[in-house]
Length: 113
Length: 112
View 1 (tube, rainbow over the protein chains, first blue to last red):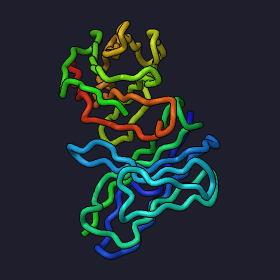
View 2: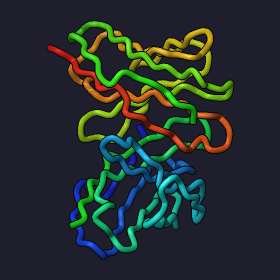
View 3: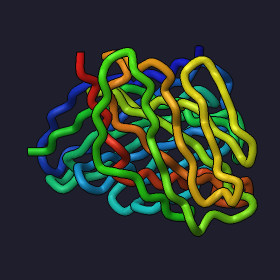
Protein backbone atom coordinates (compact mmCIF):
# COMPACT_ATOMS: atom_id res chain seq x y z
CA UNK A 1 0.00 0.00 0.00
CA UNK A 2 1.08 3.55 -0.70
CA UNK A 3 2.18 5.37 2.38
CA UNK A 4 2.16 9.14 2.66
CA UNK A 5 3.68 10.30 5.90
CA UNK A 6 3.36 13.77 7.34
CA UNK A 7 6.01 14.56 9.90
CA UNK A 8 3.77 16.08 12.56
CA UNK A 9 0.23 15.31 13.61
CA UNK A 10 -0.20 18.47 15.67
CA UNK A 11 1.82 21.66 15.58
CA UNK A 12 1.50 24.90 17.52
CA UNK A 13 3.39 27.94 16.28
CA UNK A 14 3.45 31.63 17.03
CA UNK A 15 2.49 34.41 14.65
CA UNK A 16 5.43 35.42 12.48
CA UNK A 17 7.31 32.15 12.81
CA UNK A 18 8.57 30.30 9.76
CA UNK A 19 6.89 26.90 9.65
CA UNK A 20 7.91 23.80 7.74
CA UNK A 21 5.46 20.96 7.08
CA UNK A 22 7.10 17.85 5.71
CA UNK A 23 5.59 15.08 3.63
CA UNK A 24 7.20 11.86 2.39
CA UNK A 25 5.75 9.22 0.07
CA UNK A 26 7.16 5.77 -0.53
CA UNK A 27 5.74 4.84 -3.95
CA UNK A 28 7.96 6.80 -6.33
CA UNK A 29 5.00 9.00 -7.32
CA UNK A 30 5.69 11.87 -9.67
CA UNK A 31 2.98 14.14 -8.31
CA UNK A 32 2.58 15.55 -4.85
CA UNK A 33 0.05 18.00 -3.46
CA UNK A 34 -0.64 20.19 -0.47
CA UNK A 35 -4.23 20.93 0.55
CA UNK A 36 -5.73 22.67 3.51
CA UNK A 37 -9.06 21.64 4.98
CA UNK A 38 -11.32 24.03 6.84
CA UNK A 39 -14.86 23.48 8.14
CA UNK A 40 -17.43 24.53 5.55
CA UNK A 41 -14.79 25.08 2.86
CA UNK A 42 -13.77 21.53 2.01
CA UNK A 43 -10.26 20.84 0.73
CA UNK A 44 -8.47 23.58 -1.12
CA UNK A 45 -5.33 23.08 -3.17
CA UNK A 46 -2.36 25.20 -2.12
CA UNK A 47 0.45 23.92 -4.35
CA UNK A 48 1.31 20.85 -6.31
CA UNK A 49 4.46 19.43 -7.88
CA UNK A 50 4.68 17.14 -10.90
CA UNK A 51 8.42 16.56 -10.74
CA UNK A 52 11.49 17.27 -8.67
CA UNK A 53 12.10 21.03 -8.41
CA UNK A 54 8.84 21.70 -10.30
CA UNK A 55 5.87 23.37 -8.66
CA UNK A 56 2.58 24.92 -9.63
CA UNK A 57 0.26 27.18 -7.67
CA UNK A 58 -3.10 25.88 -6.68
CA UNK A 59 -6.14 27.85 -5.66
CA UNK A 60 -4.78 29.50 -2.52
CA UNK A 61 -0.96 29.84 -2.71
CA UNK A 62 -0.70 33.21 -0.97
CA UNK A 63 1.41 33.05 2.18
CA UNK A 64 2.87 29.66 1.29
CA UNK A 65 5.80 28.29 -0.64
CA UNK A 66 6.94 24.75 -1.36
CA UNK A 67 10.11 22.80 -1.92
CA UNK A 68 10.70 19.53 -3.72
CA UNK A 69 14.38 18.67 -3.81
CA UNK A 70 13.83 14.90 -3.87
CA UNK A 71 11.08 12.92 -5.53
CA UNK A 72 9.77 11.42 -2.32
CA UNK A 73 9.64 14.61 -0.26
CA UNK A 74 7.43 17.68 -0.61
CA UNK A 75 7.64 20.47 1.95
CA UNK A 76 5.14 23.23 2.60
CA UNK A 77 6.59 26.43 4.03
CA UNK A 78 4.72 29.18 5.81
CA UNK A 79 7.12 32.10 5.50
CA UNK A 80 5.54 34.08 8.32
CA UNK A 81 2.73 32.22 10.01
CA UNK A 82 -0.51 34.06 10.65
CA UNK A 83 -3.58 33.10 12.66
CA UNK A 84 -5.65 32.66 9.49
CA UNK A 85 -3.33 29.82 8.54
CA UNK A 86 -4.60 27.76 11.45
CA UNK A 87 -5.97 24.71 9.66
CA UNK A 88 -5.65 21.04 8.85
CA UNK A 89 -2.97 20.52 6.19
CA UNK A 90 -3.12 17.43 4.01
CA UNK A 91 -0.41 16.10 1.75
CA UNK A 92 -1.20 13.74 -1.12
CA UNK A 93 0.60 11.95 -3.92
CA UNK A 94 -0.39 10.23 -7.14
CA UNK A 95 1.29 8.26 -9.86
CA UNK A 96 0.52 10.60 -12.78
CA UNK A 97 -1.67 13.50 -13.68
CA UNK A 98 -5.13 12.44 -14.73
CA UNK A 99 -7.01 9.48 -13.40
CA UNK A 100 -4.90 7.66 -10.79
CA UNK A 101 -6.22 8.22 -7.29
CA UNK A 102 -4.67 10.56 -4.80
CA UNK A 103 -3.21 9.01 -1.67
CA UNK A 104 -3.44 11.26 1.35
CA UNK A 105 -1.51 11.48 4.56
CA UNK A 106 -3.32 11.75 7.88
CA UNK A 107 -2.84 15.47 8.08
CA UNK A 108 -1.11 18.02 10.27
CA UNK A 109 -3.31 20.17 12.45
CA UNK A 110 -1.53 23.50 12.70
CA UNK A 111 -2.50 26.11 15.24
CA UNK A 112 -0.99 29.57 14.96
CA UNK A 113 -1.34 31.66 18.10
CA UNK B 1 -14.05 20.61 -12.05
CA UNK B 2 -17.80 20.36 -12.59
CA UNK B 3 -19.99 20.66 -9.54
CA UNK B 4 -21.51 17.75 -7.67
CA UNK B 5 -24.46 17.69 -5.28
CA UNK B 6 -24.77 15.27 -2.39
CA UNK B 7 -27.08 15.01 0.61
CA UNK B 8 -25.53 16.44 3.76
CA UNK B 9 -26.07 13.32 5.82
CA UNK B 10 -27.43 9.79 5.73
CA UNK B 11 -27.98 7.02 8.23
CA UNK B 12 -27.75 3.30 7.81
CA UNK B 13 -28.16 0.28 10.03
CA UNK B 14 -25.17 -1.94 10.44
CA UNK B 15 -24.94 -4.82 7.96
CA UNK B 16 -27.47 -3.24 5.60
CA UNK B 17 -26.64 -1.90 2.14
CA UNK B 18 -26.11 1.83 1.73
CA UNK B 19 -26.74 3.82 -1.43
CA UNK B 20 -25.03 7.21 -1.47
CA UNK B 21 -26.30 9.41 -4.30
CA UNK B 22 -24.47 12.11 -6.24
CA UNK B 23 -25.83 14.46 -8.88
CA UNK B 24 -23.50 15.92 -11.49
CA UNK B 25 -25.76 17.32 -14.19
CA UNK B 26 -23.00 19.41 -15.83
CA UNK B 27 -20.55 16.53 -16.24
CA UNK B 28 -18.51 16.60 -19.43
CA UNK B 29 -17.45 13.71 -21.60
CA UNK B 30 -13.92 13.62 -20.19
CA UNK B 31 -14.92 13.75 -16.52
CA UNK B 32 -14.32 10.67 -14.43
CA UNK B 33 -16.46 10.18 -11.34
CA UNK B 34 -14.34 9.62 -8.23
CA UNK B 35 -15.40 8.79 -4.71
CA UNK B 36 -13.29 9.37 -1.63
CA UNK B 37 -14.15 9.00 2.02
CA UNK B 38 -12.71 10.59 5.11
CA UNK B 39 -12.83 8.81 8.42
CA UNK B 40 -12.61 10.90 11.59
CA UNK B 41 -9.13 12.29 12.18
CA UNK B 42 -7.74 10.86 8.95
CA UNK B 43 -6.98 12.09 5.46
CA UNK B 44 -9.35 11.29 2.58
CA UNK B 45 -9.15 7.74 1.24
CA UNK B 46 -9.80 6.75 -2.37
CA UNK B 47 -12.80 4.46 -2.74
CA UNK B 48 -13.60 3.97 -6.41
CA UNK B 49 -13.87 5.73 -9.75
CA UNK B 50 -15.52 5.20 -13.12
CA UNK B 51 -16.33 6.83 -16.45
CA UNK B 52 -19.40 5.22 -17.99
CA UNK B 53 -19.75 1.62 -16.88
CA UNK B 54 -20.58 0.39 -13.42
CA UNK B 55 -17.50 -0.51 -11.38
CA UNK B 56 -16.86 -2.87 -8.51
CA UNK B 57 -13.93 -3.22 -6.16
CA UNK B 58 -13.31 -4.68 -2.73
CA UNK B 59 -14.60 -1.58 -0.99
CA UNK B 60 -17.72 -0.66 -2.92
CA UNK B 61 -19.64 -0.53 -6.18
CA UNK B 62 -20.26 2.49 -8.35
CA UNK B 63 -23.44 2.68 -10.39
CA UNK B 64 -23.43 5.36 -13.10
CA UNK B 65 -26.62 6.53 -14.77
CA UNK B 66 -26.87 6.07 -18.50
CA UNK B 67 -26.82 9.84 -19.09
CA UNK B 68 -23.95 10.16 -16.55
CA UNK B 69 -25.74 12.99 -14.76
CA UNK B 70 -25.87 11.04 -11.53
CA UNK B 71 -24.12 8.18 -9.80
CA UNK B 72 -24.53 6.07 -6.69
CA UNK B 73 -21.90 4.65 -4.40
CA UNK B 74 -23.04 1.34 -2.98
CA UNK B 75 -21.67 -0.16 0.21
CA UNK B 76 -23.03 -3.67 0.23
CA UNK B 77 -22.96 -4.24 3.99
CA UNK B 78 -22.33 -1.21 6.13
CA UNK B 79 -20.06 -1.67 9.11
CA UNK B 80 -19.29 0.75 11.92
CA UNK B 81 -15.93 1.39 10.25
CA UNK B 82 -17.77 2.80 7.22
CA UNK B 83 -18.96 5.81 9.23
CA UNK B 84 -17.26 8.68 7.41
CA UNK B 85 -17.78 11.65 5.13
CA UNK B 86 -18.11 10.49 1.51
CA UNK B 87 -17.09 12.83 -1.30
CA UNK B 88 -18.18 12.55 -4.91
CA UNK B 89 -15.76 14.35 -7.22
CA UNK B 90 -15.40 14.83 -10.95
CA UNK B 91 -11.91 14.67 -12.41
CA UNK B 92 -11.19 15.59 -15.99
CA UNK B 93 -8.63 13.55 -17.84
CA UNK B 94 -7.27 16.74 -19.31
CA UNK B 95 -5.25 19.62 -17.98
CA UNK B 96 -6.07 20.71 -14.46
CA UNK B 97 -7.09 17.26 -13.37
CA UNK B 98 -5.04 17.70 -10.22
CA UNK B 99 -7.53 20.27 -9.00
CA UNK B 100 -9.83 18.02 -7.07
CA UNK B 101 -12.72 20.06 -5.72
CA UNK B 102 -13.99 18.47 -2.55
CA UNK B 103 -17.42 19.74 -1.57
CA UNK B 104 -19.02 19.12 1.81
CA UNK B 105 -19.78 15.48 1.04
CA UNK B 106 -22.27 13.18 2.76
CA UNK B 107 -21.75 12.29 6.39
CA UNK B 108 -22.71 8.65 6.80
CA UNK B 109 -23.69 7.44 10.24
CA UNK B 110 -23.91 3.70 10.85
CA UNK B 111 -26.24 2.57 13.62
CA UNK B 112 -25.31 -0.62 15.49
